[in-house]
Amino acid sequence: MPSLTNRQIVLRRRPAGMLQPGDTEPISSPAPEPAVGEALLRTTYIGIDAAVRTWLDDQPGYLPPVQLGEVIRAAGIGEVIASRCDAYAVGDIVTTLSGFQEYVLIRDDLFSTPMPGETDQLAIMSVYGPTGATAYFGMTDIGRPQSGETVVVSAAAGATGSIAGQLAKIAGARVVGIAGGADKCRAVVQDFGFDACIDYKAGDLPAALKRHCPGGVDVYFDNVGGPILDAVLGRLAPRARVVLCGVISSYLTGKQPGPANYVNLLAKTASMQGFNALDQWGRFDEAFTALRRWAAEGRLAHRETIYQGIESCVDALNGLFTGANIGKMLVKVGEPSTVV
Ligand code: NAP
Image (cartoon, rainbow, N blue to C red; front, top):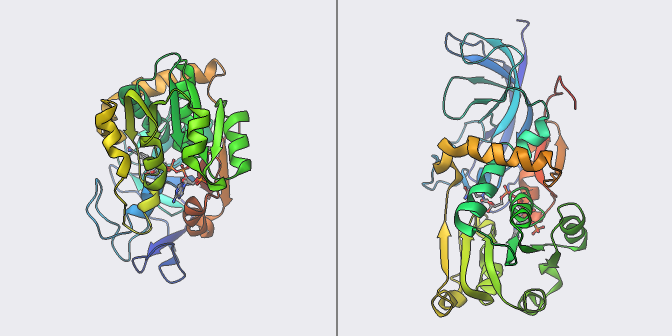
């Protein structure tokens, strides 16, 4: 194998808020040679997920914090270019915790999944991977939307929210998104097929919710927490289900104001439940089978916002917090050999 240079982004200082110059450093080193039991993956796309920012804080979580000096952890996809491992052959497309780097060693472990028969790498990142699985388990296990019910989804133009809302539509619900800005709201309705979308940056969210959800909210799929969660809690329908998927409004500060309207859970005999999609790892095939069927029926759209080059990973990560993405935020670091 010719010698390859692996460009990486490592953590140098724990960020306070958005990432600043000096929090990270781009470095280069020779790409590693796979040992027995390993394969070398050439990264094509790095997924920029909200969770990446949480891993940079020195806080316990479902995965340990990224340590100073380590490559920043992120889920990605790539192609095997050398293998000394029975699980992967050269040319295989594999999703893994690639991190912010151009080459990564993979093993036959929980985090590395070959995607036989699937060549559309954007679809894998947006739908047939953890993002799609998160939307699927949150909506189908906890939200359980019924035909005719009203479902509200926050960060509706984002990766998880855009898929979650479409799953509620497929279940026959009326779906209202919440997103920041007119362009995003247009995409939520036109591209992702929601019935309506509220621009929360335009002001008076409670009044907009009252207008769009006159009979109350039966299911709320919450990606953001904070004042948006509080406003929707104030509008719950009897026996509503609130799906706590994420609290991105707190990831830069670590602070989350308590929702005053939580008492409405009592008044409406409603429930609020959190979940971690990775707990459902053993059911990912179930999710992908259903998602593939709906996509084949033309009922599931996906979009991506793609930054170019490893050096743009930090900007892309900050961009999640300024709302720079519609659909899945990705950084393209290598050309896929199969372009669909
Ligand atoms: P995403 O929705 O594609 O992007 C984040 C979006 O959040 C932004 O585009 C922005 O949209 C919105 N946002 C950012 N700061 C906000 C704020 N202060 N208030 C309101 N909206 C804000 O990101 P994602 O990776 O798919 O993650 C979405 C959520 O799902 C996150 O909370 C994440 O932690 C969670 N998640 C949970 C699981 C799980 O297993 N439970 C798994 C994956 C992801 P606007 O422009 O519309 O504001």
